[in-house]
Image (cartoon, rainbow, N blue to C red; front, side, top):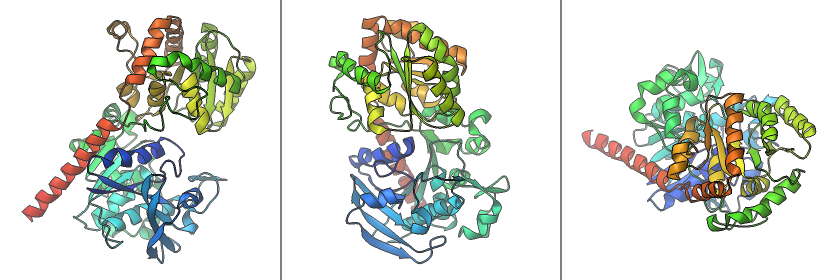
Amino acid sequence: MEVLSVASEVYPLIKTGGLADVTGALPAALAGRGVNMRTLVPGYPSVLGQMEGGRVVKEVDDLFGGPARLLAGRTAGLDVIIIDAPHLYNRPGNIYVGPEGDWPDSWQRFAALGWVGAELGMGMVGGYHPQIIHAHDWQAGLAPAYIKFGRSDRIKTVMTIHNMAFKGFFGAEIFGQLRLPPQAFSVHGVEYYGGISYLKSGLECADFVTTVSPTYAEEIRTPEFGLGLEGLLNARQSTVAGILNGIDTQTWNPATDPALAQKYTSSTVHMRRVNKAAVVEEFGLDGADGPLFCVVSRLTDQKGMDLLLQAVPDLIGAGGRLAVLGSGEAYLEDGFRHMAAAYPGKVGLVVGYNENLSHLMQGGCDAIVIPSRFEPCGLTQLYGLRYGCVPVVSRIGGLVDTVIDANPAALRAEVATGFQFAPNSVEALSEALRKAVRLYRQDKVWKKMQRRGMKADVSWETSAGLYADLYASLLRLKNDDDQDD
């Protein structure tokens, strides 16, 4: 099977969050299952800088406001097609946000991504004929619409929701420039509450919709998590499914990770103490004999960081310490700075993101806190499990699907891998943190929980099989339709 993945970011070429990790890991996971996946990605400066020996496979005179070239090749272990369009993507800094907020031409930048994806599916480049277009999140959401309204029955489309909160909503005035026929501006096309939503377009027009965990697939059919799209998702529930994300277990492997001060395995988990000492030094913490909790996250309300900020005094009072790596809302960054000043040696903060430091934290901290208000899947808890950094998570989305709560029954059955809490409140989070501190003091119980998490299957093995089966089922439907015709 030939599949074109359409994504605004892909690791290791460009990454702002978990989307890149998923789109970067999935091609290799599918390779052994008869699926050849190529990734279409915008030609940001960092992407073009890593592309060596790419060949020009197509030139486009006018790609939403300027000329462009498509470059095909292999780099960083990925088969890619890069959209080299300087007028759209040659910008410094964040790929989504400029000095004054979201780039004002975001509608053009990602309409171009979807349009090129669809055109590739419809034979834009001779000799390349993907059978399935797999679009990721709102930035690629127009690709299924271009296929549907381009009347291409040869191509099947899959739309994956990584986060319902970002809909890619723009005013109706852009419609005339989207290269779609008039009938596409309807409830069965790209129209959404009088404007245009790229995410809604993908959900409406794709042959099948996936999201990144089974629980989130159920949650988004409710008003609380569907955020205005629950009606659409309920109407097509037979073609919506949750497929859990995995992680790249080669990149994330404590036995070989060069970012660690000390490598280790589940049988030598006691050696993590060397990494813990390195984290303590990095964050300026004291050497107290107690659990070290960490956060590796965007500092936003969606991630529940306001709840954690309020729970810090309880955590410190129970005997824990906290290392925070992340950036986000100014009031939360300031709040954690205040906590670091109020509790010197107990709370440390590094603002920003550092890939190597995030690995070290997973390899040295005792527990990772993920108090999200919603979490489609989450990857940091999977990294935590893999590294013996016990997750403390809210009872929602993919967190429910991946972490087994250390309740009395699970502890007796010796299956617990972390801590869940509900509801999303400071009180519930504080109690979960206190519970974690209490269990940390039971050394044998804690180490068993660490080893159990490290042995859990957090790879793409199972999920890649589900994606391969989905692609195959869509192609069977196409073949059946062709025979009927």
